[in-house]
Image (cartoon, rainbow, N blue to C red):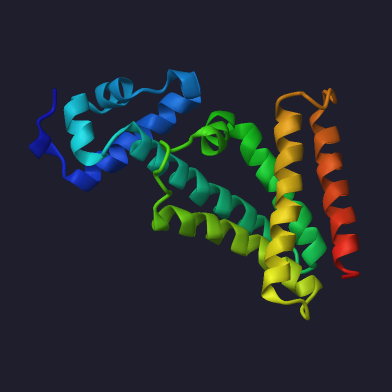
Length: 200
């Protein structure tokens, strides 16, 4: 078993997050535990809890890494197109594809809840805002005269629909059976929402 002096606090933090992601990918959300993470990085659970307050804080850092990857995935798609409608369609499909390829991490991002009375830290809230900022920019291109609050509301509405379609599609609750049909549904939803938004 490695000694605490073998790695810095920051190194152990990064190692633990990487190990947790690997466990998630291999065993799913139910397979993740502090004991497994600690064993994977060669430290005790006690040492792990010197770096993280508890398992919830470790999961926050895992979810933060997921948000970073989601942001990168959708913004890379947005750069491909100059047309904002095509950008938003590509971003929505990138969101779906990320969820399909990282289903356990995507599930944890939306299922993990902090204990009652504990608020999300500011640094985590900022990561959420950063993801939505990427969606707001094409909407602002479509309706440059609409105020920021209206664009923010539109962003939430649009992405709530995209997320809902992804969730239903990935859980097979739509009874569609084929990936391309989920993609077509999402593209149609985005196109129809933007048609209405353009008339605001």
